[in-house]
Image (cartoon, rainbow over all chains, first blue to last red; front, side, top):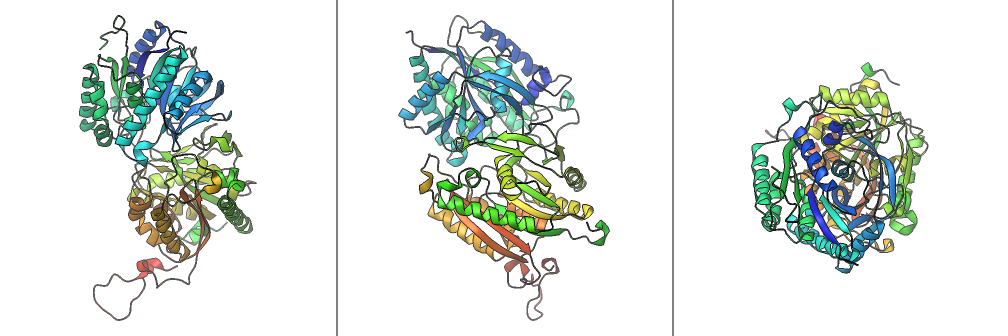
Length: 301
Length: 313
């Protein structure tokens, strides 16, 4: 059997606003659009992924928050409705997805063998979180690939951002080993924003783009610094300053997704492809992709 | 129901402080402590049934909000909930009855007091673990309609106090007799590994010491004192997942910012390391004068101390 490999890694923010703005048939809410910079960026990245041969999407989500280790979806199919608890007016999405349980169990086994606390989630009534739904919908609207969802163990709050770097890195190494042993071609997804301070009020028309902007300039400057380092291939340095970035901007990197993905990909030294940056209800969001293939890697924006 | 014009004081029959963890609902048999918490919930259920309450009003720390303060307003939410961590303990099907008029009134009262607030009424809305556990155990037959309000993750003291006052406004305006329920842990640090439930204990001696001190306050009915100690509680015995420990602020602002309560700690046990207590606070007229908040703020000595008007029922 050929060795499995990671064929792409995507930083894929999950504001439900983006699905709302797209008006897919699965979502009950209706919009007049909005956040095109991000949505068009997602559409371009989705087209790129269509041209890549892969078997499964493995997604790390900060909206399945576990305090007792890292959990993995462990049943082959989940079908239900995801309603965002924060923005239920925007996101009520009927999903029907499949899970690569074999790969999930392998990842869990390797992670457990390396000393991490783990658990398979096998309750059929479990509702898949909206971070998973949003990022996967935007990257693969046809839902024609199985996924593996990995929960975010809350190390940042329980211990510190530095502990999160250690734990999420260890999880990334374990997942990479399991992928290699599986023989499968995998797209990794870290589902989160960068800076993550929200406005606490909402416009009467949420998609009124005349009112959308970053929460404050400090958040923007930090976000741009991170994007610049991504462009320069400084993924190790991005992770090194992650604790300070997380604390300074309340960044959603606190969940560990980008750390996990960079570690799994061996801290790439090549440029990230940047597909768009825009604020959503004040938070900073970049869509980026790390393509390990020198021949297909692009300069997008 | 009483005429709203009769009084500007809400009729709050008693308050309950209870933990959000699902073990007392799903697995009381796994640990004697879980069973004791379950028995305490059952005792509260009985007291609610024997009361003349029109409404169960819940503030849940496991329902975070960002866009202002959200209030559940779907008349009959039905779903099967599964906890993110404790999914292996089982599912929690629910079929609740909400007081839509109160929810709408509460949201309006909050806006009138300067808050951003809105109701949520969507089929499939994910009611949080803490609210599901509390309502399933305290009101299993939906005999009394309920209202659930979220805990805004950015809100601090002033905003939370005002949210409680808006609840009082609404109770007065609608003339409803309420049981007030706060769903929150004491210390909230859980073990970060899986444990044999039979071996459950409070995560650390420090957490246990602080829990017991706060329980002394609860037992003495010193709700306002606990409210005043919220920042110390947050710093000493809470994992800082949000900006502040808010439930005591809301509970005091809703029930009345004083110490004139009869407190009863029905159970205190570990829940995967966190401190879980079921406590009742009943308004009383007989206990003021011997607690810190009740003492005068003395500028000029006039003899023996007096009590603040604010602290008297």
